[in-house]
Image 1 (cartoon, rainbow, N blue to C red):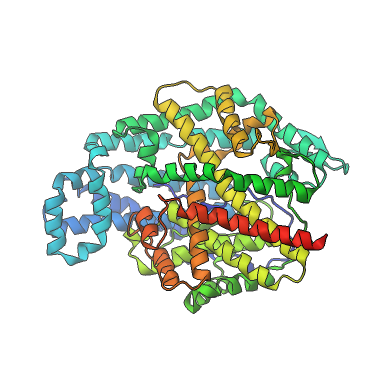
Image 2: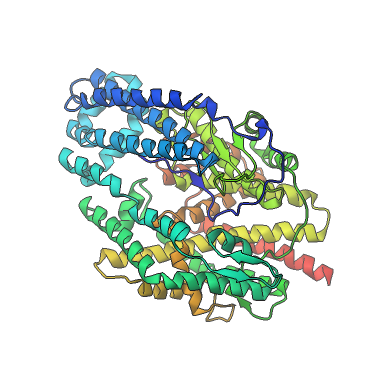
Length: 615
């Protein structure tokens, strides 16, 4: 039961603060707990409740009243833990160097693991009580109806649920979960000696991961090549170690699949939310079918950058530079205007959050980099972490993260706690939908062709990075997990070869679209998402769905807006694939992926028309 924040893909670079912060620019975590002492007092309540929960063992089938009492207790425990974890996590985000906050986070993790262990008997006992007896309880006590879907989820997983002892043992092994990801984080953030480079400007840099995301966009092509050569050269040095590390994670996933009697790792992973494997397979098939659209983008990129042959180190610099400064007040106004099609209630709630310290806005020393949303304090409100830097990228990030925040706000408001938490499968729809609305807003008022080209180019790169790149990662995952499931060994060198074949196909190397040096094929070692199995595909499916939703809402298609808002309000009250399908998008069919490709082509049509006019 660990909190997982909804994060932007990719790291943000810390920049020096541009503003003198005021209290209004900082979020108010005091609304969760007024002090660490209050946090500790609430944590003590968990200890007491854990004893009460232990007394429920063997009691679930006794009566409808006792059944409800125990389910209510577990729900209240979980809600309290989420609130505790949210406070601990966001205190640490405010100041990553604060040892007291780190200790609070560790206490939170230990508390969560104890809760997982204490709850391990619940699912096996629900299965023992049985579907018929539970149906009687639901009929006898209508207040149990809030548990109907969670109970259905448990009953559905009967073939993959162990007995009390087995579930308790797996819960104990939970302390070891994520070891591969933790080792990766320490190795890449603390132990690897990153190279120092001198750029053509004379600037000397230390090329760690954050610096890489910044300097791979440099306007000087030789500098970009130097950055990529040095960065991936460093990863190549640790190819063997990182290969062993990722292989250990893949083996762990394979073991869990076998223990829980799944045919393979992907089926187990997707079955957590009852997502058909067919969704994953359709995504990969449709992405490959639409690679000509990606190739068209790369050719357009080469033309706009003025290079005869696009290389891998040419895919990150913006197609057009913009010196436009967008202070937060301007960005705030743009976002509020952008989401106006979602109705006054949505806009008013978002505006209230801006005005009442739901967000930590600006960068500062020791603050966590990047951006995320935390919606786990159910009885309070969502929190957004930003590192706003007065540029368009910051504005899109505000739109993105507040898409998540409004999703949580609407779901928490409409759903009881037990069905409020939605899956990532749905989450990224809300965020990327808002990004599309923002694009539509800024295009309406763009004053020059260059400004319009900048926004359109930015949108193309977002579609490439969020759809095609994440689908490429997903295909790589599919491949390597399948091989480990079959008992095959995988070295770092083998991982690099596998990734290289997929990387080059997606970038049209054989067709002469992009030239990729073999040295860059160790890129898999740079991607932390591979330690969270079958996670990244949801970015690709979500942006495909949101493109179709945005198209329909923008066209004022009858019923499109209410269906979309109902999807957000549904939270976790149904299986995510089914909820999205009910809202009008079936991600097991080609339609949403074809719509995304059509959207990319329409953007490129407009860019080419502007370029032709400028000649």
